[in-house]
Image 1 (cartoon, rainbow, N blue to C red):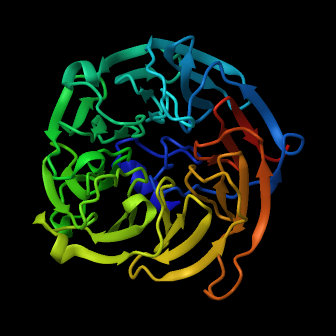
Image 2 (spheres, one colour; image 1 turned 45 degrees about the vertical axis):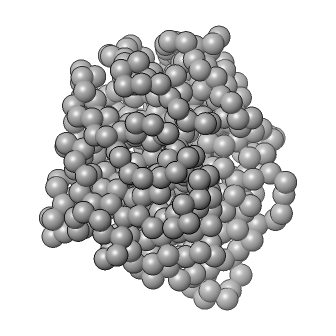
Length: 426
């Protein structure tokens, strides 16, 4: 939990409570939860503490802080956020501007996950609306629309990126055909703190990205500023000063054949001194060392794997290891320093894919399929790469699931397209 606490302090969120999940990939943005799950199996009839139907469709992962669980969705054709307490009782709901519905069968107008600092919660929608809400009451502190301010969305598909927090700002990445940029808004006022045009060469759909940036404390030994943003998309991994948006360095080579359709969905993850970049529609993973300036492609690429990858699920990273789950359910634990496979397991074949990202707990790894089936693998995995990675349980909710599970205080919050489930021991 020390890594998580340092990561959250870097985001300016103050002391981290014992168990919270402030944004899409958890306290440190790496898919790692503190503590252990209290159950190793569930179904609609077993170990469900509560289930509440949601008032509209959405695919965002919940943000959990204290006794507040926030999800986004649509309500009667409008963008909305709904807050529950940990007993499943609705605290508040806030209906905002008109929604823009999803195109893809598994997407919605509310794909982006909320993020909170314990005082406010920020929500973002396909329509371009970004709003700051009071976490306790749902009252609107400010709202703006990125597409009204900076130009229309040109993505071929549905918005996927989620907002992230720096010490003073909420940052949104817009990577698309046409002008792409990073925009930072003052957390208190909503005024534009900075806007950086992210002009990197990429052909056709490869210019489009659905990834979420990483915010990390800077390393002075590497010449980094106090906070750094790492951004993956448009055939490049870039690093930016989180205070100004200024580009520090870029690494290319992710699309050497200039494939026009290498849009990126899986986000990067930080594993110690390297940034892990899944790419090429799940065909590659590249590790780039932090530091440097300018084009660091030749000097800072630590390793590349072309036989393993993930197109949609974002890897998790902990203790020098990276956990990768392919869309078809092949799971590998990689050494972050070398890229070597430490352990591998093929999950049972199924016509349903994996869109949710893997989550690491103290006692298990959770991998959730789009039909709501979760496979639970022992954590840590066996030290011997040849040993069988043991399955310790499974879960079933029987509803369309693309949101990533949230794990706090031994409970698992599962958000499906239609419902919010709370799973744990009574």
